[in-house]
Amino acid sequence: MANEVKLLDFWPSMFGMRVRIALAEKGVAYEYVEEDLRNKSPLLLQMNPIHKKIPVLVHNGKPISESSIIVQYIDETWKDRAPLLPSDPYERAQARFWVDFIDKKLYDETRKTWGSKGEEQEAGKRGMIAILKQLEEVLGEKAFFGGECLGFVDIGLIGFSSWFYSYETIGKFSIEAECPKIMAWVKRCLQKESVSKSLPDPMKVYPFVLEIMKALGLD
Image 1 (cartoon, one colour):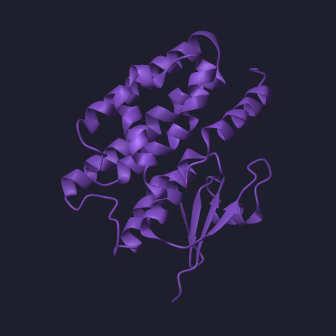
Image 2 (cartoon, helix red, strand yellow; image 1 turned 120 degrees about the horizontal axis):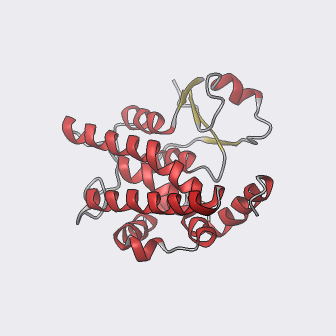
């Protein structure tokens, strides 16, 4: 059966970026479908009726939802190149743990840096930096979280970097000053074409964030 791959996505989504990078790493051709999240398509509602969110990977008519699950599915389905998860069961479990940590902790803190004001915003900045410092410890002296090659945790985190300029500019702080090892890692990731071509320009993300802030009455 021919591989018919379709990705329902929204360009600024760091979760959609994970799937784009994974597909690029594997060299999988796919149809990209940009969604308007204020006017969700019938296809999105049909393919993800539970959460009604992007990203959704549709492979031969079958939908897979939730970005970290999709990346694991891609890794298991296209096994012939660029393994994303470690082969060792313990290391694989650890990689899943840290992506779950990113999903449960980092997004909420980063959102506070632009989606709130006053003490809540300050708490978000502190929380975000604390999480990135923890991840710096996990990275250690390795080139990537996966070792010498881009892996599951790298893919889980790198999409946030396209929002770093917005967090810093709106929150008036410097990630590089606080977490230089993370910023050096970002630069290494961006040297990979699968990453650089899958992430939007941070200068394009910034006005998008300002639009959301205006809609929320935070400008």
